[in-house]
Length: 136
Length: 402
Image (cartoon, rainbow over all chains, first blue to last red; front, top):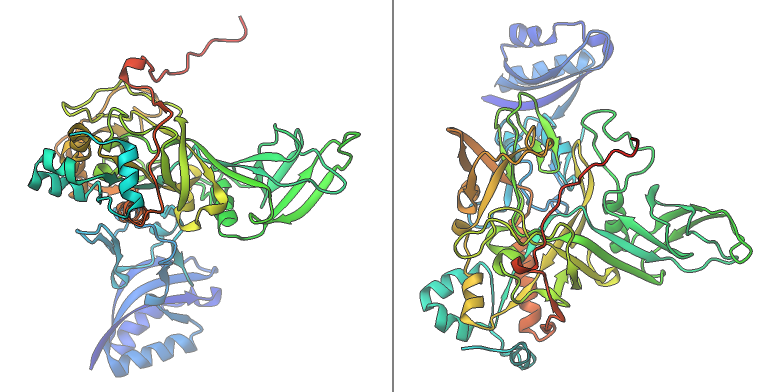
């Protein structure tokens, strides 16, 4: 069975020099789509990507990453809207590169589609009541 | 047909007043006709929920033992400086005040995560706030240092006094430069990448009473979730602007100074707000009832988003350099469609003013009036109108040396 997951990889400094993504593709036949990357050799790195392939291979790939010292988080938990703080103004709507925010046409309530979020963080600081929070 | 505020209040007390929101009135009056709608409807409620920087609170924190004269000293609430140029224990906490160690825009764009507006929100929420003060000491006020928790419920007075709220219409902000800019109109993307607007349009209080025929000094309003009053016309009140045929200003015009007891307000309607790269402020919830005294008054409340036009202003050049140029006018109906066209370019729009919250405010006020909990007031004096000759003056700089 094929699966596709969006994950956040945290690389400790010693791992940033290793071609881990190459191994995911070559050794485990997984396809990857990098959504965000911030990797500098010798520093802690961050890579957000969509990883797809056979369930068995996916699990082995994750095991390989874990053994290599990479910390893995599911992406969907990373940007959360504090519903009590959101005032539904709309300041975030046109800043989101993946159009994760939209307006409910009748009520003009701001909808947040978690699945479209790539955790770029643009909305977080631009949100006037600071309702968007990144959890790493 | 004409009604008086006293007659409407009698109906409110009997639970018989017909109250609709400024959004609802549009369809009702179109269907029934102005005359009949004006007879049937007693009150139209408006609402707005937007960042409003000229907001703040006067606090009287009570006298310590021994006494301290905060007046002329330095006082901080949760590290945010307050104004002390008043009597011994009165201070003023402004919405845009920042802690002295906030980096501002030193690391551009500054985040401005905590300031005066946030302290106001925490006070209203009933949280303890840390007061740190130093003073010079006098014979009658010998103490020089004070560090204590304070809480809204324990202090003598907390008076929200906003010298400019509820702008009657406002600019649409855009950015024609080649870099991102960070403004009080939000983050504006380069090359007309987005357009931000900031009123509740057809629900906005002063857009429903364009000539200030019912809203005046002394008008009782919904302010920050409690009761407030119109204290005066707001700063920069500018009635003499371009208007459409039905009187709606086509640019920022009237403003209100509002006052109310902070102790009966609610934190969900006074929200500490951070504008990236700009500063801190307070988002204020305001709702104003409009008594339908005549068909003319009703007709003003029928204003719809299609009738309200706002100027498109370039915040990368025209605004900072105080140039009068605008990039065009656009209706609120177009703004709310999500896209407008500027210089042939399709530009996505967004609001900084919360329409869902504005509707909620108009409905809360409607509920208060329907239940007989909120009576209307007769203004004790009108706001200055077009005939007042008041204009919005720029600063004329005069060199001091020379």
